[in-house]
Image (cartoon, rainbow, N blue to C red; front, side, top):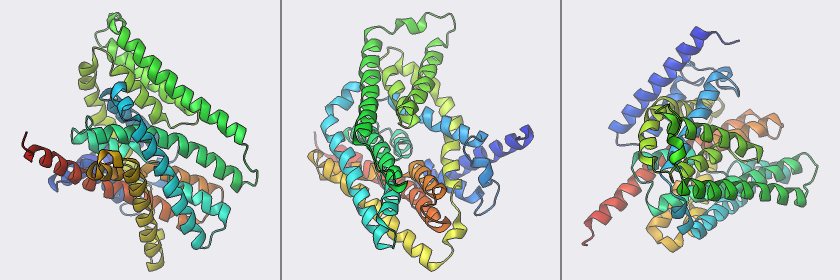
Length: 397
């Protein structure tokens, strides 16, 4: 059992570390998320040891707070995303999502097999190269006020498609690794359920809210609109997991539904204090989940460098090719926006370790790759977006 005072002390340490890391990053002209992830590395088991692996294990208070933090983050992103905006970039987002899965999976499989793994284990390792961490990119886009850009709509739409395909792919490689083979009919049913859930909730919910949202104000509590949409956020986050999707997909859909209400701007302001409190926990905990001791030799560092380069290039290439109709510069922005693996790669690495697919060293390399892509992308993406904004401002009207 966790002692209450110990939990409070840990929460204090994590929150203060996040604020210090974020402040330093911003003074260095970097997105605060970079500083928060770096702060997690420093206070985690590898350096200061103020956070232990047991404290960030699944189901612990820190893990729960981190999950709530990223759920609320994607909810707030959804609040700034209208359904009609996503429809306009639907075809491009689909291409980005598909190519952003196929190319990294193919390159990851070839690398793993060339590194000495058999084909079944290579497929499992390659799955860690696939899924984009929407939370990290969304935070950068939100900080820069860039959520209304076309590239941002494409990235967010592609992230939803990415998550569906990654979920199906993981199901296949787990079945192959277990020697069970896979049932195409079962995969079709799972895919149909996931797409149906997103379509019904996204399209139907947005239409209902657009038609009439005055009922949100009917309860006597003046905070009722916020309370109702937060309940919707948590409910859809849970339901999305029943369809095999990440909880953040349901949260994003809830925010997108709420964006159709006449209370949208009020809801955005009311959620800001919640985000300031909870989202830092997600990024600090993400940074704390790496064991640097497993990388303390030249061979491991070389392998990490190769894996990270493959991870970045493969996602960048997939996003770039899919978004080419937007132009080369915008396609490059989309490509970089799809690069972060973050918590998704960590989860797949944990599954591989538990299944005995690879040892602690490969696990540490995959986790480190996930976190490095999460740390490298934000400053590059921020620079590209600022440059795009400056170019636009300099263009004669």
